[in-house]
Amino acid sequence: MRPSCSRSVDYVIGNKSNERRLPHYFVELTERHLGVFEVLNSMCLLDNYDHILFFLECQMVNTKTLPIPPYDICLVLLTLATTSNYYKADILQASDAYNFTRQSLDQRALKILRFYIRILLEFDTSKYEQYDLEFLRCQFFLVIDTLSPKRAYRNIDRFKRRKVENSKLIYGESISINEDELKDLQNPYRSYLSSLERKKSVLGNTLINWKLTQPGEFINMILWTLSNSLQDDPALYLSSHDVWMPILDIILELFNLRQKYFLKNEIGKGISADLCVQRLSESPLSRFFQSVDSIHFTSRFCDYMFINCDYSLKGSDNSSTSIHPVYHGENQLSKLYVPRTKYTKVYKARKSFQLRRKIIGSCFKLLIHVPDKHKLISPRGMSSNDIVDGISRTLATFQNIEQFRSFFLSDSLSQEVFFIPLLAEGTLAEIIENHRQHQEEGPKTSIKVVKYLGDTEQFLLEFISLFEKGFMVPYCDKKITEKVILEIKKGDICVLVLFRYLLHLIPSKKLKCVKSFNHFIEVLKWNDSKRLDVANTQDSPLDIPTLYLTISKMLEI
Image 1 (cartoon, rainbow, N blue to C red):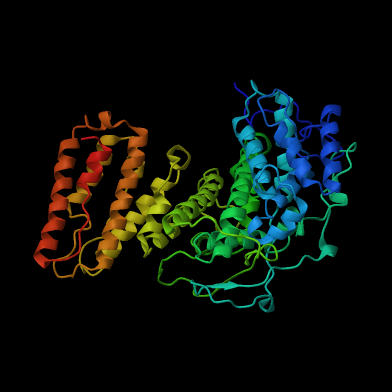
Image 2 (cartoon, rainbow, N blue to C red):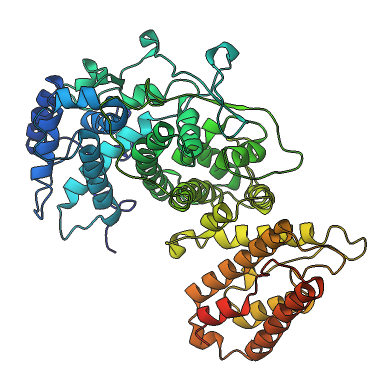
């Protein structure tokens, strides 16, 4: 079997009985790697960040020998990635006066980090030595294990109100670090003197592990990223787009890799369901979601995942969410910075919901391993069914069609097939129920199509039944308004998402050979004609959406 990041354990020594209590994935330091460690360490202590980056960049070529930065330098790179030019232009120019690469230090650091993440994801032993890959994995797992979120403490005096688009947000000042509370990361290598023993900050920013492990700072970082990813304010948007969206994406990749390794090597085989739940509650992704810190996990999680989005959920918590810049000055543009790019609302929505989906997907990656009829000990109140229902109810109340479309518009179907169809199905059921609420009679519409993604015949029959009842056809006694059109569009998007995933699993040629296919097309056309008839009867000036044209293109009819 080909080695992978989760399976390759030939050189780990942490799984052996030892007094040092090393993590399972731990790989010992060799003399060759020690030389690289010491070179990078020396540059770091001299604040020669350009030299660190240049040293690593020069060796990012097709070579069998992989330069591996130590865990402390990886933390320095992550912190360096937070020093964006838009608010630290003066400091960056002083630190990198010549800038012969014409790229800022933060962007170069991100490029290097992505390079190493890609190597871990591929884990290609034909390109790099297996020992080097396991050793690289060890360094980044040491990094991610230091980013354990701590619960927030509430202090209302910490926040200063600032008016923004979304009235449910309160922006405050960044929180200073109490250095007496900082604990150095335990150095697992006896022959290496970590720079963390003397290094506390990078270009004025506290090291990221110390920053994010302060109470409430990890979830604040996530909320700061998501809320600002849709902002019009240039400084707030750049803080998300240039700094925290790429960093949070890297952190999520590492947590997911760490979780896979944990499930493969550390949870234990043949254990009872109760013990499995206990071990899962201690897993990396469980620690990640403990930052939500609420006994009502689902409602709080949904509020957080859709922060600053345009929706109106009845009965939702009307309290404001307090957030603040992760680092001082992130909410202001530097006087030396000149914006050169204008980001459209469509671009912002696509980027924002791509990251939101990734966080939600990580949540489901944790929950799919929970045994039936069991719940995690921590985070409390975490259930896949509850989360599907909660997210579906929220999405069904979206008032912005571009945001709604962006949530479901995925470029990686194979990576999201385990949860997006469930959310599309749940959202569709909520939209249909909202559409027919003014009718007094009739049972609640039940939609169960996801379980038939592998059974094309039954999948089509379910939609035939749905369309025969008149799917999202406006009522004759109800005026066709912009809101009615919005609801129809949202319902159609859910249908198209489900068909998109069906075609991802089954070729369109095979689908067109199914016995009920022609009947499905006839019913689809009939449903479109019913919509148009109602619109013509009311002489509505609004264009009513139809489904046949889009589905026929998808099916290549």
